Every structure is written in C-alpha cells, then in structure tokens.
Length: 200
Image 1 (tube, rainbow, N blue to C red):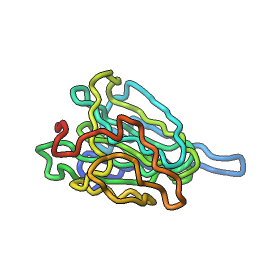
Image 2 (cartoon, rainbow, N blue to C red; image 1 turned 180 degrees about the vertical axis):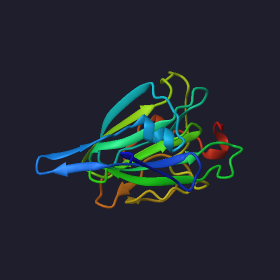
Image 3 (cartoon, one colour; image 1 turned 90 degrees about the vertical axis):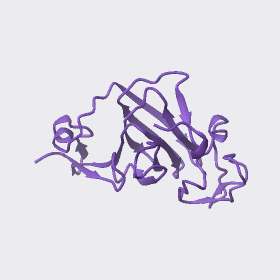
C-alpha cells in the first residue's frame, strides 16, 4: 500500500496529497513525496526546483503564474497555517475562472498539487508560516503574470478577510478579523482582473 494518498479536486488538474504519518512518543515520520504513488495516481510530473518562503500573518501572495513557462506546483506548509488557492486560467477549460481553496497547516500536513495553467496564491492565517513548494519548471524572470486576488468575477472566498471591493486589488481598507492589516506586495496590488490578463 502506498504512503501517499492522492485525491482529485472538483476542478480537473488540482489534487490534494495526504501523506501517511507514522508517529510515536519521539515524534513522527512521513514521506512527503513518492514518485511511485504519484505515478499510480496518474501524475507523472517531474520536479526541477524547490522553493521555500516565510510570511507573517495577513500576508497574501498572489495570484501568480508564468505565461510561457508554466509551472506545476506541489505546495505544503512546514509551520503555521495558510489558505491556499488555485484559479483555472485555461481559456478552453469548462471550469475557466473557477477557484478552489484548501487550508494547509503543519498539523493536517496536506499538500496541494496545482497543474500548469492555474494562477496560485495564499493567505497567511497564523502569526508566521513557512511555505514550501516543488515546481515542474524553473522560474523565468520577466515571464510572471498575475490576476487580482479580489476580482469579483472569480469571487474567491478568502477566510477571515474583512473589507469591501473598491474597484482595484489594493490592500487598502482590508484587514483580518483581529485587525491585522492585509499585506500585499506592490506588484500584487496592481494585477489586472481575469478578463484583462493572460489566459492559457
């Protein structure tokens, strides 16, 4: 029996990955990636780059993609808690413009596989979060695209965010329920809406 459970999401190309955790009084052990188990689930991606970042509470990164060198991403949280989101950017897909989100935490140890052709982003819900992801292609400077995190046409239901859409993806006026200001990079506050951005 495999060590990795792979569950397709309602949007084709997205998968929840759950490892088997072996724990005792000393701690735990788990396989975070197993090529054989992934192959048996129909996933034959090859990863070429691993990335890791740390973010503080209220940080929202996204929604990002690479235009001409799209990346599949296997994402997970090493510490903390985030709400992770993928948006279907494939113009010929029956689910174009739809989103799917999952909470990733150090406790649930879930991973999220996002195939090429999706925009990706996440919101940090804990004081800090360490986020790790494997990519199927290298990062290519100048190839990055994005879409507004709060585009009403997509309608992502970000948990714990308070604020009203004012016609832009600025973080101004948005907070978490405990008053923590929403924190986005300058670039992430200037992406276009879905109708005006790159589509696969």
